[in-house]
Amino acid sequence: MRHLRNKDGFIKPLLTIAVLIAVGYAGYQFAMPYYKYSAFKSEVKEIALLGLGDAGKVRAEVYQSAKSFNLPLEEDDIIVTKLEHTVRVQTSWSTTIDLLGLYQKTLDFTVDIED
Image (cartoon, rainbow, N blue to C red; front, top):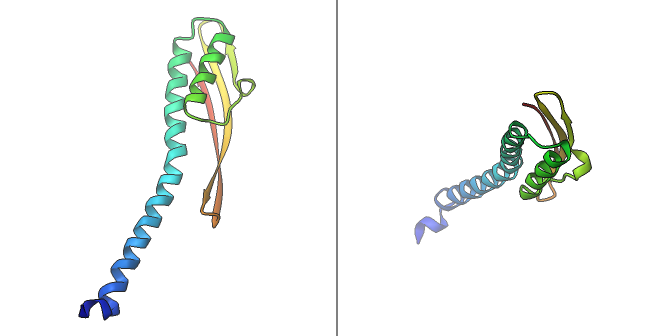
């Protein structure tokens, strides 16, 4: 029990654990939007590559993909341009990260794929 009364033996590990938890939480909050962006962009690239149908069908598939990733996009935010042998898909959105009300950061994401 003597080590509990020693401030070097109890406070430092407790403070280290609290800092590690805070850094892990902040890392998770920032990593998830980037992961969703990367996965969504990859899926849009596949949809554009296989976009043999009309532009409306491609837009609907991209919108369904955005919904599956819980992205703040509406179907009107997705621009699909069908050219002779390519399909171009453009969209963008913003996400605000809020770390317990102490820090807010807005992240802007843009997808511009042409396949």
